[in-house]
Length: 152
Length: 426
Image (cartoon, rainbow over all chains, first blue to last red; front, side, top):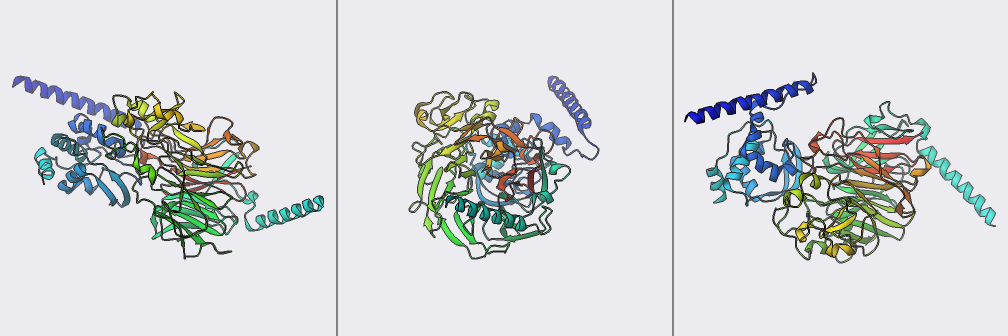
C-alpha cells in the first residue's frame, strides 16, 4: 500500500515535470497569434496504453495529431464520429468503413480496413486514447462496450 | 519549288504567331507577383497567382487562347470543371465559371473536345469556338472501369495515331488477400491485374467503348499513375507511379520506420506496349538500384526472383511523395535546357510518419531523346509553407496538376484550395 502511494507520487511528479517542460517548449515556439490547442488531458496521454496501438495501426493514415489526410483519410480530432455515438465508433473500428462520408464538412470516399484482429482491450484502449487526445475530451470506452458490439 | 514552299510556310507561321499574340496575352504584359505567389524558383523565373480558390483542383489544361480548365475532386457549386478566363490581360482570371456534372482528375483539350476522366468513365464535352464554356451535352468514350475507392483517378493521354491511353489504378496497396491488413499474404497471381494496375488503350473518337472488351491492356504492373504524358518528341508514353505503402507497418521485422519512409521509390516509367513494371510482386529499391521481391510474396528486402525480368524505371524518386502530374516542356519561353525536359508535380506525402512528411514541390528532369540526361532537381518549392510538415494537413498548398500555356508559361494547380500559379521566365 505504502509502495503504491510512493509510486503514485513519483508518477505525479514525473508527469508534472514532463508537462512543465512541454509548456516551456511551447512558450518558446509560440508566436503571439498562436493559441495552445492541446488540453492538459492530451499532454498526459503520451503513456496511455492506447497510444501504442494507435502508433502501430492508425497513425499511418490518421497522422500523429489525428488530423487525417485531406481528401483521403478523415480527421479524428474534434469530430462527432469520434466524440459521440460510441457504438458506431466501435463498429467502424472492428468492421472498417467504406464509401462516401462527410466529416467536419469535408467529403471522404475511401476505405478503412477492419481491425477485428485486435483484442477487446486493445480496441478499448485505442478508442479511449483517440477520444481523449488531439484536443478531444470525451469519456473512455470500456472492454465490455467493445465486447457488446463485437458479439452483436 | 522547295523555296516557295518554305516561303509559304514562313508566311503561314507568321500569321499563326501573330494571331496567337492577338488572342492570347503577350508575355510582356504579364507581371509577376512581388513575392512570386510564395514560391521559390530558379534564377530568372517568377510567378503570379492566377486565381486563389476554386475548389479541390486536380489537373489543369490551358487552351490556345489562354482559357484555363481545371478538374475537381469534389463538386463545387454542384459542378466538376472550373473554366477561367482573363479578359484584362494581366494574367489574373477575372471570369470564373463552373460546369460539368462529373468530378474526377483527367482533363485534356483534344481535337475540339474537352476530355474528362470521371473516376469510372471517360467522357468528352464539345468545345465551342469563342466560348469559354464547353457544350453541356457530353459523349461517353470509355466505361466499365471498376468502381474504386482508392487510386480511382483516370488521367488520359493521346498519341498521334488516334489512340487514347487511360491509367486504371489498382484499388489495392500490394494485392493482399485482406485489404491493408497486417499478416495477410499477397494473392498470387494477383487477380486485380486483369482489370486494373495498368494502362488501357482505346480509340479516341469511338463512343461507348467498354474497358475489358474494346480496350486493350497496353502495359501492366503499374500500381497507380496519376502523372502521365505522351512525349510527342519521341512518340512514347511516360508515367510516374505511386509506389506501395506501409512496409514497416506490415513487416516491422524487415523494415524499420525510417526505411519504410524512404522505400520504395516513386518510379518514372517509359511505357512501351507490353511492358510489365512488376506491381504487386516487386518494387524498386533506389539504394540497391534494382527491383526486389515484395514482402507479401516472400521478399526479404533483397532477393529478386521473378523481379529480375521486370522493367526498371528511367529514374527513381524518394518514396511516398506522390507524383500527380507530368509534362514534357515544348514551349519557347524557358531557357533551352528545359526544352523537351520533364516537369513533375509531386503532391507530397502522407505515408512517411513518424518521419516528417515531404515532397510538396515541382521538379524538373532534363531529357535528351527518350531518357533523362541528368539528375532531377527541385524547380518550384514553397507550396506547403514554412517549417517541418509532420501531418499532411499542415501543408498549406499541394501541387497536383501542370499545364503549359500558349506563350510557354507553366501553370500549377493546388488541390487544397484550388490556387493556380503561372510561372514565367524573363
